[in-house]
Image (cartoon, rainbow, N blue to C red):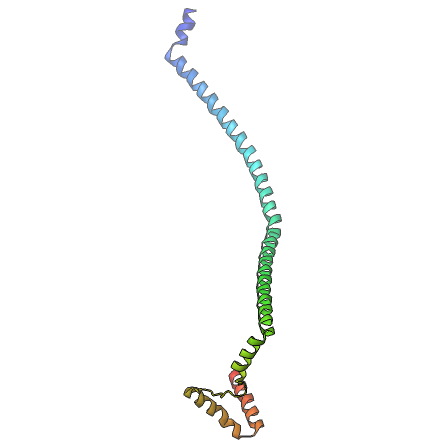
Length: 158
């Protein structure tokens, strides 16, 4: 046994044993890495394929869902505007049912006066010039004014 013990502690034997152990570890780690890499690559490819399929399958329905939600929101907004407009019109109708309001509007818009009152209108000088220019066409026959209007609208389109 003394020879074996001496042989066991010799430098050459220790280096040889260390080299064999290192080679075995490297071989084992390479095979594990290759096995892991090949197994991981296959799983990763399958996972990527499944994820891509899900994305493609869900993309169109999600786009439809988002666009429909936007359309519903737009329609709700329009409905609220229409509801407000109906309320305004109801208020206006109720005001017109009141005789005092109707009389006020008639006097203001149509310049009506009650018997015994004197009505007068203050004229803006700038508005008078515009009225004169508009009435200058009143001296001509009506069909000439119509034809001039057609010519003006035709010139605006070009």
